[in-house]
Amino acid sequence: MSSSKLSECRSLTPRKKTMAKESAKARARKRIATVARYAEKRKALKAAGDYEGLDKLPKDASPVRLHNRDMIDGRPRGYMRKFGISRVRFREMALAGKIPGVTKSSW
Image 1: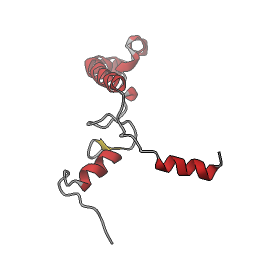
Image 2 (image 1 turned 90 degrees about the vertical axis):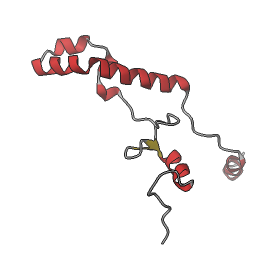
Image 3 (image 1 turned 30 degrees about the horizontal axis):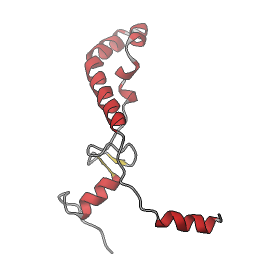
């Protein structure tokens, strides 16, 4: 199949909604809970300089392992920190008028 026919075929196929798998969203929630549970202990160990103690904590207790996800559908990419949602969801909500103060620009 030639590349022009392939791109034509791709443009005709309907795109599915972007939605994260439930298992990925559950794993992210579990990581957030683990980070919160061990936050005080990590802080105390770091202040004391006990790096061996830090090594014994679970890997998911480190806040570095958290990844920002869309609050509504869990999309991991295109996250807009100010709104807490992905760019796709932001565009949908802004065009529907569900985000106060946001309007489509025109010039």
